[in-house]
Image 1 (cartoon, one colour):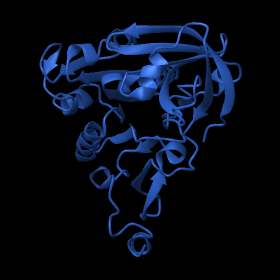
Image 2 (cartoon, rainbow, N blue to C red):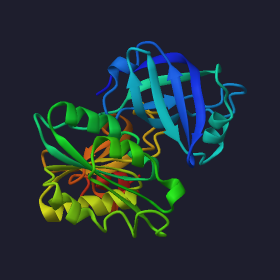
Image 3 (cartoon, rainbow, N blue to C red):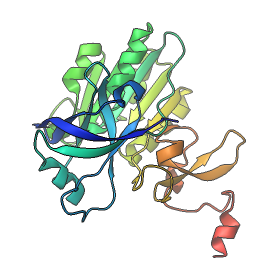
Length: 283
């Protein structure tokens, strides 16, 4: 679990990057706490307070020397539109780092990074950690169209083992991200797969990994309204170490989970075998 702090962070950079926005914030005491998979919760509309809830964003980069963190976001609603309208020099209230980070292999390992769209954001810091300890990485980056890809050149800076897919064939391999997945895992002899992106993609990746007998970790994109485990809007069913399924909170128990334990097909439902399901049904 992260140890977050709240800061008034100055915007150093805010610029388009493809279909997305890159935001760099200066905030003392945050960057040195960040691990790959942590996220930040930003107050996106401090001017009139009409947007009460913070918006969560995976942290892309953290630079303790410069006291900066970087996030990448898409304009998807009122909150992100308001954030995109901020300017360099403005101040944003931020709480970070939040959540549980990715489990990192001990010692050298071959890892495959799989991401849809800007879901790739938390994977580059992870790739850096793995390569620093003597491991190797490969990437599969996918998106519906070429303009929705993120981080292709960053991935190529780590490794020549980069595959790109687009649903419409506008860049790279035509098809969904799972099309080359099995072949890529075998080609680099991946010991572990890390996946980040839409829920449907995570489900498909976890299924392939289970079939191939490869460990899989997933960064889920549940709506995390409070970010600190209070509101319960981000719950999803996960099988515990004791084999019992429970609803857990993505923001504090995740957002990085063992993909084999997440019951992706039951997200949004209350499975009858869930611990406490009978009591929930009586309400």
